[in-house]
Length: 544
Image 1 (cartoon, rainbow, N blue to C red):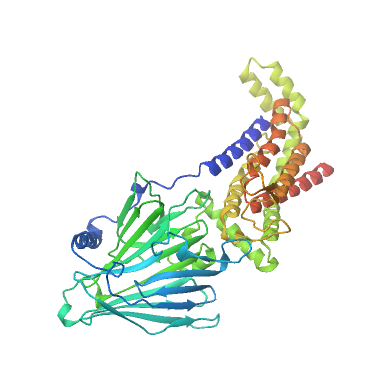
Image 2: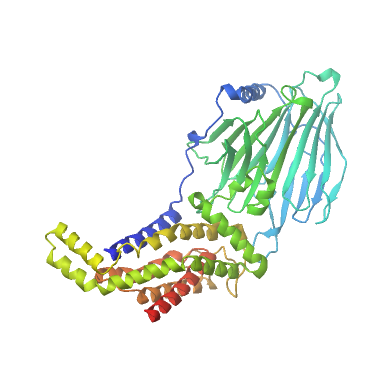
């Protein structure tokens, strides 16, 4: 009985991992987004109506061709990133992350502003008026350079019309944060007090070509104290929301561009799938004039890695973007633990080994109990077989005899399985952490393993290998993991049923093929866990 339950648990685990990898769960239906009731959200609805009305009018904006707007590039350099802000918009023309690169050899930095189509700006402002006008641009600094010990620094961009109306954007940069605070202020002349300009901020992104297990790519909204991951498709090409949105984010597996509104109302956000792979998120920040004291609005931007520490510093629940699903309560402490280890050993491969040992120590007593129970069950296996054979036509009597046998030998048939059930959530949490954490991206371990977020390959072959994703090579660590799992199975008490025994010995082969394309960091965890389990089983065997 115990072996059947154990086999069912192991096979269920395999099925869940395979299913999760090939059929990653879809985000909640977009219709389930909880919006603010109409009565409480009248200002936002009014804003949407104004936007629609203004679209029908002949408006102009910074991004509309034909507007005479001088273009000037301003370089902002901090210890974390270098940024080129163009006054034509304004818009972010370049945003290079100094600690993140596009390839393992680290020759080129990741540029968040150029991870989309070249025909559009990744992130740009748009000011729409109800009349045609020309602008002059005044900027108080040509460039900004921040060191680690520098204080925060501001940059003022002032757009002035012929009638002396002004829109002023004030940016505040910090030396050790990817967050940029922004204040946008409108100053109208006496002759133009009835003008109601509208300020929008647009984020363009490329639709993900393939889904990455455990990590969402695309737009996400944080509203009503919950994160909603939005999927745009041919059938549902648009998505709109009104109300106090805390932030709008465009995220990939490892990076994010976010507009942090901090639930300022009214706000109207429209997401749209455009031609090709281009997707667009437009946030109507405000229609200046009404409902806005002094014509000013404050908000923030975050362009950077999906790193828990930096997202936590940015505030506004930005750390919710690192989302491990139902394993969050286990996965995030494990991620913090891995980062803590790396602060000392400076190698994430070694950190994974330390974390694996720590988890093994926690579950050592449960594993001992499980193994001892399996040994006890093995001892009475002949008696179990006799009872099953004797009462094979009388199930009730068979169950009574089996329970009597367990009582006689003081054995709980489920005690060997329960410890395994308890550990499964931890395994899933580690699986997610080691699969999509940015900390492992291009993180080297030893020799041939130069990227713990990619499959391990020794050498590179010019020919393809069945079931293997490119690059093609020898998956040394995966083969070692499979061999260690086979040794562990051989050391385990064998089931009384020969068929079950054969199935259990097949599991290492199944896992080897399944792990062949998994991140090497995950394979390393599984390999080290197997080695520790082999040592534990050997110790208990000698002791018993």
